Image 1 (cartoon, rainbow, N blue to C red):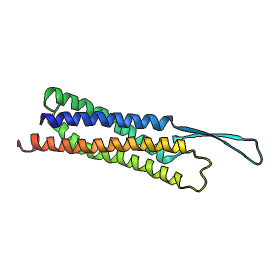
Image 2: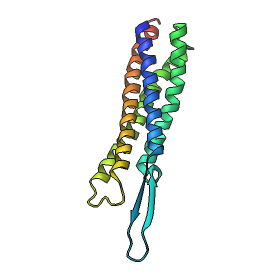
Image 3: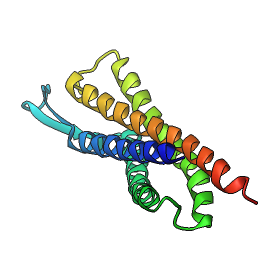
Image 4: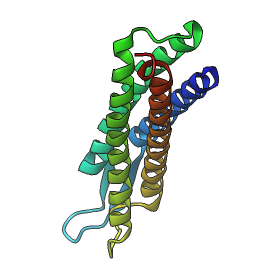
Length: 169
């Protein structure tokens, strides 16, 4: 079981790093364009992730996953150091909350990928630069990586739960 606990800790740290990277890329990506107008001079247009609802949803999901991963990383460090969970009730939280949070992060990644694909398919992408869409796609990829790490960690938590707590009763 000691090996599973260490792998669980490493996956939680990896998930934390993926979600932090996703949040950083998502919030720093912006695009500036100059649009010509018939009635006015050239107009400077600047937009970022906050101009699209799906990217805001992806940020909210990644931020919630980041906070959850930070909390679970602390618990995993304590579990590695002491060899036991903080309390027996926490292991139930660990098993079920992992599944719920991983699905939330996964839906955020899917929303980001979906909007990026939709914006790439527009016939006239004059307002959206390819660089901006590539950055948002990378942010969604890191969010997907956080989802995968959290989901695998949830299966490991379930295995630890079954081995340590379920069969002792």
